[in-house]
Length: 607
Image (cartoon, rainbow, N blue to C red; front, side, top):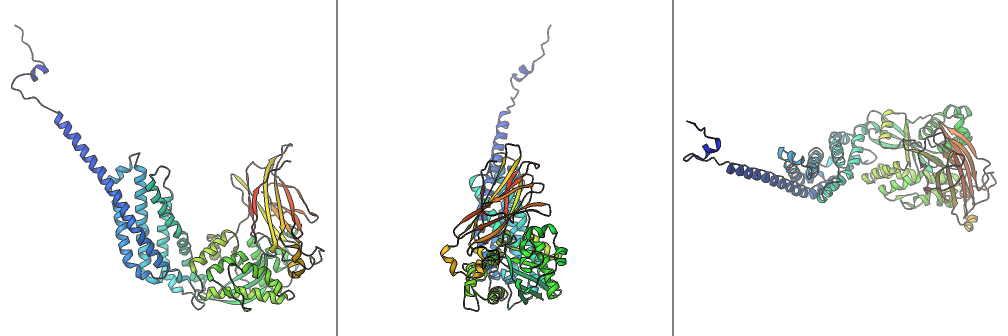
């Protein structure tokens, strides 16, 4: 007899045994998953909308608070700050937590959510660590804290705001770094727009706050909190061009003591006697003196013959020490364009003769009209320049100044190397460097060589008011296999020939001061600094190149060309530089500051 063992299938089919059904559980699980995922997605979407609405509500409040602080009315901004902090806190909290982090891991939308979180947290950080403490200081914190009142700056007020500026600067720079690091290429339009907007808002204030953060801790000391400090201001005259900017004219020594800054001595470059050859040789090399000719190193007016601000400052302070008994640690050079920028911050300045000096007319008044008005009196000219400098300084120290505009003016001029400074005081020199006022020489990078091109009057005139120029630079491999960089400099004399007879000889140079140059001609040296390791191959031009010269300044090979142009005429000087021994790189050009800055274009040539 055979006994059949039931199979698994037959046992399930036996009558009376209930059948287990798993599919409802599967469907239920799927449904629950859908609900959870859907709820999570809905939460993320809702949170994103919350972030959007909270930041949009914060935007006008942030703008209002900013304007009140800048206007010195921070104490009235407390209600807006309280509301602002609520909005930014909600925005930050809405874009945080595990659910938000999980959503950031999704490839298609994660980058946008990272950007939203970064913006929300950055804005909240700026509000908490910059805006809130700033407003808590009340009206103490405003640009006016740096503004002199009756010739003095409130050092105690500056010291009180320094910690807040430090906190604000850190918050702004951190936010700027985080937002700048975002990859915006794949962001959705609305998200990218929000990132760009916040980035722009921070960029508007971060540099100024960073400067104030650096300045506030050291400013009391610089303004004489620990004892008197001296600063020498040199006003350059670019109508007689020099590599640093212009011939050294009015010179003003100011002293800062317990926050009060005053003029303690005024003089001009003409008032200094010539120094000895021993003096010159102890401060500048023979190579530099050969390059810039004998007045360099012995004559105060010509201390700006070098493009190196530290050399010009050393000569200037040393001449003050040897002839006037004062050796100022810090020397600041200011050219006429920089002065015109500063006049935008002070507004018009009234001069003793009734002239109103403005940012629009200062160049013409100081570099041209004064020589016509006082055509036979150099002392009157110097007095006029001194009055312009001292009256502008007085406007600043009397508080007749827009502080943000002044900061912008100094920053703009520093970028263009129109305000330069050098100090033997380490604290001041660091501040100078941080502010970008230390100047620089041509630089070589991994990808490029930078040439230096500078102009210097070679007539003893003020004809460079009428100088306009163009620089063309090109690089070619010649048939012989050598590589040549060619620099072609064209100088135009835009003076109307018919105007020559009526010009002061202070402008035309009185026939070249013995050079026998026709009245109305301009004559300049052109200095081309070649890359280190290159060789000057030739110097040529459309005028006599007799005074042309090949020399060195430190490790730079330098070509000195000559351009002489009659009224209404254009002449050129051309310099060829052999760079065959150097790796092939792009060539860029650094040009010294001038009244009319030359255009630099590419030169096509054959060799």
